[in-house]
Length: 133
Image 1 (cartoon, rainbow, N blue to C red):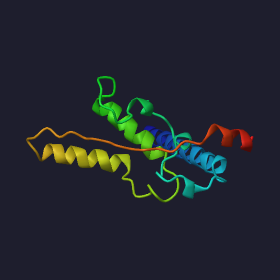
Image 2 (image 1 turned 60 degrees about the horizontal axis):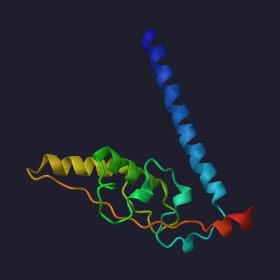
Image 3 (image 1 turned 90 degrees about the vertical axis):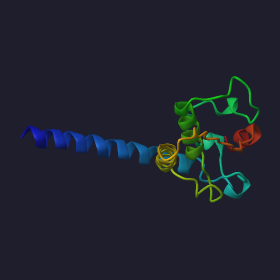
Image 4 (image 1 turned 45 degrees about the vertical axis):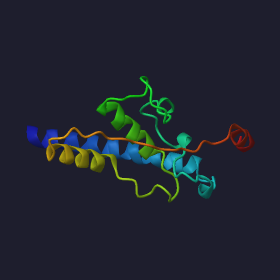
């Protein structure tokens, strides 16, 4: 009986998390539904995604303040993955696939692998936000 109850609690939690994820994605699609996605030439829109890390700190200029740990790198990748808009970046690998590929590559090599990430994102111009409101 305990096992069945525990399984039902787990199942309810899983479906609740799935519903929340879907609700957020649906809300973002609704909010940004009227933008012209062809104007997002990079395929990434900062305002569309969730910022799990400070993506502005990683601006392409190497310095001591933007070297990141593997955990921070994952947070940056997850942020970028959540900012995908339109079809330009639709083939970006899911974070779980990237992590699996990196772990497999590291386990099959005696070398130290360094993961590098370079991205360019679009922003909504503040004047456009005022015009919509």
